[in-house]
Image (cartoon, rainbow, N blue to C red; front, side, top):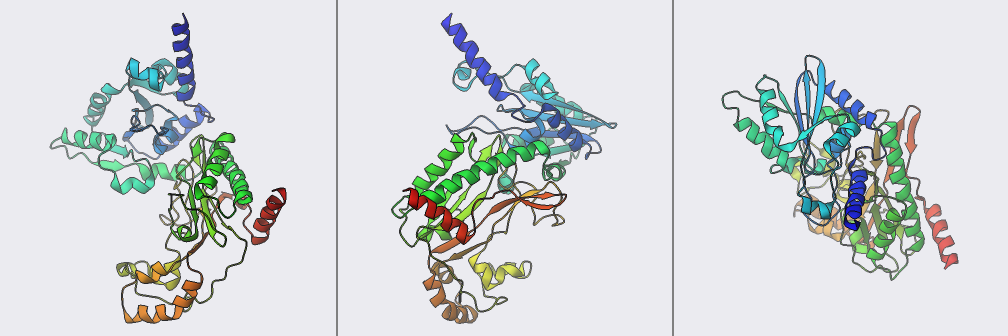
Length: 444
């Protein structure tokens, strides 16, 4: 009797976790699919969700798949068919071994999934035959590749989706099957956040800001970077977030000059600055906020680090000078990353400001992250040329003066019909940071 009740309880918990809503109405997912298929004249769109986890880390659904379905179970696939102006969708789900279900939970049954998602539901083994029959009708194929993040798109080659598409093409000899990339069509939708998405993003950003404020108040000489990391990420969970949206970057002293430093294992010293680049995830939506604070309050000046505002140098990446002239200016040496990116279901979500028209639209949510990173290693890595030797002779004293100081300030913004809204209102001005630290020191 107890075993029956226990299994029933586990099933109910797993069902609640796996269903589509997750704070977003199921009707919105249907509307997203309608808007997406409206961008396709005719054809078969194939998308794969995330596979079974390969480690004990928390599993998460792939962003594009989650955007269209809200389905939070592994090994699923989605087929959207557009023909004669009419569109339909089918979700393919995988069975779970009963013993595995005892560990990972029981997936929802197909009737429940169909009701919650508004999609027809079939078993995953029927995916191949169904796609073959659709391709036999002469319909073109569109692929939503199953990479976990846009940053890894170029490296996608061995995922389930990539193998399925390769096998599909191989099964159509002589047909000359062309597979088109569906991501540009989907990205144009994902770039414009709906009210439901904005609510999730605002919550993720507010949680992040709250944790950052606590970290700013708590940082002091002698603390370890991982202590700040634990304080920040613990604050995420206490406030109801999924956890961090990416590996927290807590870089002090020399580590502040490394853009994606994640070891977080240095003991902070008086006179250091510490860069805290962090973000909470809330119901899949990612915040990304950065603050830089002194572990001992003092001002910094940028004096003598470059010869002039438009001065250039001979970089190790000289082949880019023609196509990207800015990457060969001396100023670029101290900030070689982009000025911002979109955020949403991914930390680097559409829109991608450096692609397409380069303009923003109402509903875009994005970061702006200026920074400066000073290290003699930047000078030491340069090619030995007359131009570089002359520059180094002039700027080395200033670089040595500000050695191992990295500063990055990153905030999240929304384009509204009335302008730009600053979403991540954590303290960032010198007087704001000092006031927050002063209140904290008095409390201690």
